[in-house]
Length: 487
Ligand code: HEM
Image (cartoon, rainbow, N blue to C red; front, side, top):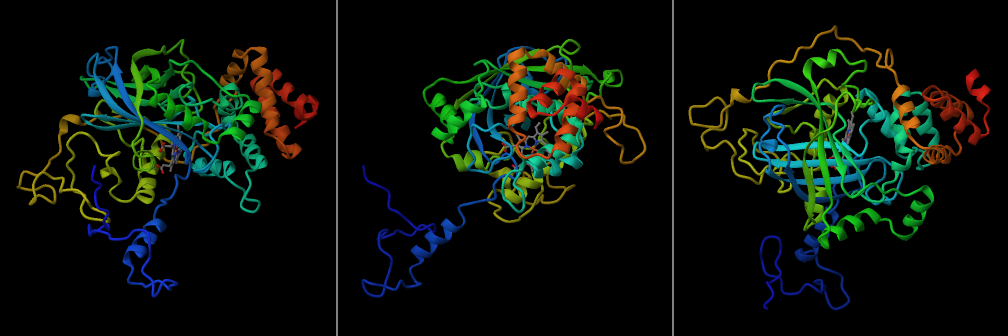
């Protein structure tokens, strides 16, 4: 086999890729050695900003296969008929760690999906938990700061974490999940995924339903204890990547059963909880899981950087038949992700192969850095809209029906009138004795160096969820129940 000739990026053949051009055998090098200059300059630009959160991740391609008819709820073509297959990319991640962080860390796992549908890309950017730490997006950057490094010590700070959580009782549900057995999944094949937010479905008659998405692992759940995770990290910092990559390479394709919970539009006024509150689940007894399909991962990326690091998932990417909801957190995320992508990847990030829709794309965005694709309007004379040259035009048929909203604009206190304790208490009561013991051990293990007044404030929250929860944590910390009651 003859090898192709090595070239510069401009395509000129290269004669020698081993030796720089020097004045005499001892040097110095000449600036005219553009080959050397180009090589060094490219290396200097190999890094792009890592994701501000969820920097460490693992991704693979696969398919969604529809197994049940849900056309009574949605006209989205991705769910159009039984047997329908849609290509997808899944990227899972830890939240707080940087790009080189160890995989087996106690942290929420991201569960970001991009479905390449015939009506555009549908991104569902969820987690392996059905709820979140905060319910108002104004608190998201503050929360993330508590998970990252202290500005002076450059260390992560248990004090910051517990200070914030103890001042934010809405976090208790997610905190209880994070410190439970499910807090350190062994890998991504053995965990569930959730869309987490409430989204909307629209059917062919344009009737609106509220919907939550669930992806249940068919591999069963597996987690590490703290001690096991420490041993795993000592052995390998890439345990999740190794597991996912090797299982797909060997043909052992992980699968998840896909379900939805569906709520008729007007039920939102009747539920005892706010169905758009991201710190709450919808009880399955009231809104049962409805099976939709199977998701399988079956192809590793050929190039991790191009296809996983450059992947851009955004909750703003929806398709006809799937819409947003009034969830405040979702509303903020609709802005935040595409903004992050323009910064992290550049103006035309949607045209990168991994992000490019697999359906025709027609838009009037013009020029900008790295404009590397053809005009998208359908006609070279049509570079504005409206125009008389058969350029792409709007289609009123895909309009959503109006959504009734009301209320005076104000900064409403989201902590008033919200029950932050019943659902985490129910979760605690659902656990068996051993699970509760491990939960409370894990919590206490994370509290080293946290001042007593913060611990007492947090214990009061555990007690409100379930007296045994507060008492168990207080006892492990050597604090009396009376002390926290007095707090
Ligand atoms: C990543 C913002 C809440 C799941 C990100 C990124 C930003 C961000 C800026 C980096 C995006 C990139 O560079 O590609 C926010 C804001 C939130 C929020 C402002 C709340 C107001 C959430 C919630 C979830 C979530 C509630 C899950 C239910 C994820 C995931 C990723 C991510 C999975 C990684 C996506 C990937 O794999 O590329 N978030 N986030 N985030 N976020 Fe959020």
